[in-house]
Structures are given as C-alpha cells and as structure tokens.
Amino acid sequence: MTSIALTDPSRTDPLAGGARQWRVDLYYPAVAGTGQARPYADDPILLARMTESGYYDIPAEDIRAWAARPAPARRDARAVEAALPLVTLSPGSGVAAFHYAELASAIARRGYAVAVVDAPYLGLSRLADSRIVSGTDDPVQQADDPHAWQPRVIAWAQDIGKTLDALPASRGVRATGLTLDMARILAVGHSLGGTVAVEVCSHEPRVSACADFEGVVDGTTAYAEGPVRPTLLALSRSAKPERPVTVPDLGRPPFDFLSRGQQDTHWGVSISGGSHMSFSDAPQVMPSTLTRFGGTLMDAGRSQQVYVGIVDALGRAFFPGGGGNAVLAAYFESVPEARATHAAPTSLKP
Image: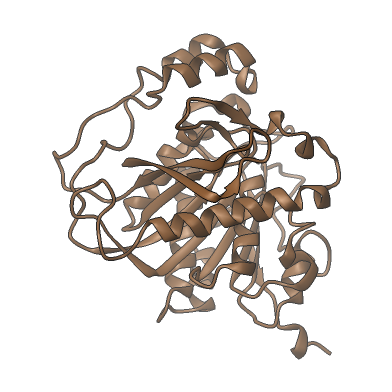
C-alpha cells in the first residue's frame, strides 16, 4: 500500500474553510519481498484520539494493541506488472480508514488496486494539516432526515471523482511500477460510505458499477430517479433458525429503488450470518462491534471470503467485456449465506 494526500483548492472544507483535503490509502498486488513492513495502525495521534473518545466502545488496551499488530500490506512495495482494475472504497460513518486494510488487501489479492478514500467528515480522519475530523464534528450529520445529508453525500462523491483524476493510468503513484486501468473502476462503500458509492454511480461516467454494503439510499439521486449504472445493495443480519435468509423484495424499501432503473443489472442481496460492520475489518480486529441480535455470525475468514467475492463478481460482471448478470447469478448460487435477485427494467414491467 501507499498513502496519498490530496487537496482540492476549488472546494472548501465545510467547517474549517480553506482548501478541501483528504487522504487515500491505495492497496495493490505487489512483488514479494519488496516494500516496508508496518503496523496495522501507524498513527499514534489518531490512536490516542480513539482511546480518548471511546471509539466504538473498544477497550483502550485493544486500541493500543493495533499499533503492534502487523499490517496486511507492506508500504510502497513494487507493484506487479499489470494494468490493475480499480476499486474505490468509502468508509462508514466514524470508521477509521485503516479499519479496511484487511478487506482492501483481500480484494487486492484478487488482482485489483483498492483506493480507500478517507473523505473529510465521513470516517475518522487525520488530515495533512494534522487536524482530526469526523462526522461528529459536522452539525449537518446530526439531523435524523437523510435528505439533509445530501449535500455532504454529493461532496463525498465528488471526492471520489477528484481521486480518480489524481490516479491516472499512465504512471505510478508513489509506488514503483503501479499502473491502473482507468477503464475498469468500481465504487463500493460501507454504511454511509455505501450511500456515497450509490451517489457516485449517478454522476461519475468512469465508474462501471457500484456496491452499497449496509448504507441508507433514501436521499440519494439514485433513490429518487433510479440507478443509471449497475448497482448492488447488500444488507446483512445474523443467522437464526427462525429467521431464514430470503430473497430481497424489490417492491419494498430499501430495495425498491433498484426497480426504478432502465436496466436489469441492479441487484438486491440479503446475507445471513453477517452484520452491519461485516464489510470492514471488524470481523478480524474489532468483533465486539458486530451486531448479532440473538443470532450467529460467519467466522471472520468466511465473512471476508463472501464479501470480497461479491466485489470481485461485480467487477467480472460489469467491467467492459464482462459476463453480465450471469456472473453474479453464478456467484450467489455458490454462496449458501446469500439470496440475491436483480431488477427488471421499469419499462418492461406490466
């Protein structure tokens, strides 16, 4: 992996003023033995803030232990010689970007570059000027109505576009030999970051498809107008014998927006044995944040396999020349924990 500090002087920080800034952690397949080993959490200032603020009610000693845990990716390693498809990954509300390192590395092992876009006031971020910012600082995000958040969601979606501008296909970015295939891009996100991913698909023509894991879609452009690019919404719950996994109902919220599109490439997915925090490193490093509601969860290894598989199948389906719906259908057929369906275009419905 490598980290990149980005600034957009054409837009301002919504609270502090000045140029808008954010960080990107870029993960990619690398040549074995190159780069530098590093700890899972290598920012002591950010860790101190987490400890002070009671980050997700995790004990202080567990937070400090992340500084001793080995990271799954080496810093500034030599990239493999290939033009890599790109996945942008938007964090959940208040979640630190490094809590997607295990997930992003697992996606990278499938042959992707993964840009964890640590947008300001979305996760928990330390900016290049050393300020620590999170959604709790933002009065707009304290509103209960998701429509009130739309200006922030649009701004975070614009951060994805600006990140794509900074990652050209023709040269490496602070990592020897790294080449990105900018014709093959997915936007994915967790929780509020999933909301951002759906918004990206409404505005960013460079993105082939998007996936929202656990994010509210009400208030997005796609929810109001229907998705215009292949879109997947996945919701997860713990498994209980009396709560069998069922196919999503595309006639009811929140999946109903998928049927407003003019294509049959929009997918609703229900996952049994997952949690709101499963599309992150929570199963590996902070299992106390996983919600069970009296049920059981997949083990950490299986959870990662299922969620990474969804991202990979989405790319293989909808990148240029991909296999389309048949790829996703075959993948979900092989995953007993998941039930999925895709929307028929509105124009084809009686």
